[in-house]
Image 1 (spheres, helix red, strand yellow):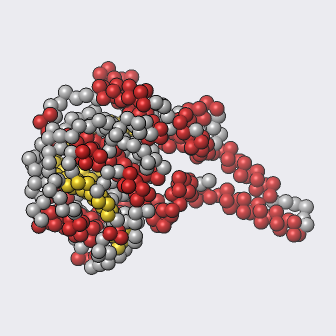
Image 2: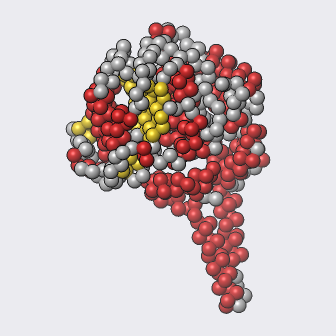
Image 3: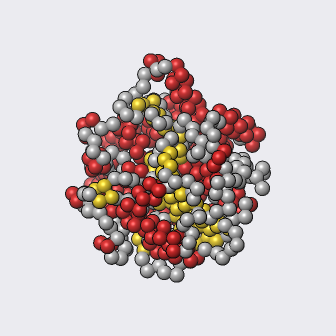
Length: 537
């Protein structure tokens, strides 16, 4: 099965065909038509066979077509030998390595194998084994940084967490034709805590970002955490905030069936869950999503009346691929930038959609202030995952790089780097530049609320760690990038010669890989084996 259809059908994703198919044109490249060449050859073979039978000719094209298909298969999978297959099988989290070493056929072989024998593809099959590894990981990741002063700094305060669709870091503090792309975000970040080196925990879906935010463990891929493992038990943020006396709220302006959210949030301890059918005003939609503006204007009035604090998880979606903002009313008054020569391109559409998301976020901040909720609340905002396609020619030009000498390693870094910032009333104008990721959000919010954190793979953003990783085996440090095979210098893009490095630098990088494998191994085991179900109540 071809990759694009495989991801549609895999684990029930076919139900999301409308949302996924509309984004496909922005993701395909012309050379990828070669994926379908065997369909064409087989069609010719079948047609020629039919013609041959009908005409009763002696010459048959079908055998030639079959031979061509066989040649194509051989050429694309010539190194799918037992050694490579064994190597690929070990990469339970890295599609990059699976395809690199085993071709697309090897990847699908391993994918099917893991689906059939999932428990055999996890490193830890029991809770005790996993917890031993977890304690080792936590001990090795301990920092000397004094972060205790942040513990309880926002205890008892309302918390509003806003997830922005596809908003990457590169748009922050950047202008186009003299206008800021994200003026409201820029102002918010300048006045509060600006986290400039936040990375998505995976390259996949909004649901995966939510999963990492809620549980502080990695997703698997393509929404599996919500579609396949939704009934798992986690030490999730809702349960912990509920124990601390908070009323939990979740809001997303889409249908509850999308990414199985109805079942997912029925499992979590959320007091009020709102989807599109719960909003009174649905007059402005972007495809199937409630516009960000209508989401923000209504959600604060829908908060439950309670004496205690509120924890609200709000998911915005207007800047979703294909970035056309179809359905926005009076759009010309809500877009404050002129994308100029990029008008009508993917980059131009993306920048306009981000500019609209920023416009709507500004409305949310105004609504908070109007209700006297802004000054004494924790407000977190972050992008869920990448928006722009990597190596887009317009994007490279826009970033001001020489196309001939562009640092491709830096582009991979930009691909996972998403916008992030937070307001804590007692902290002003703070910038965190050390690498952090989505799995670090939950332990941060737990720390500032003085809530005990029983199980998180991440650490507080106030306790810097030397690396973060994406669940396909990529590692990001402040200076270096690991592409699941080699280390690179982020500034030059050149591969590091490990043997010529200073011993302490080499040892640190090797330990980062060791800890990354330990971290993802624990995460995958917890996810696929549901190892916390009998130990967290």
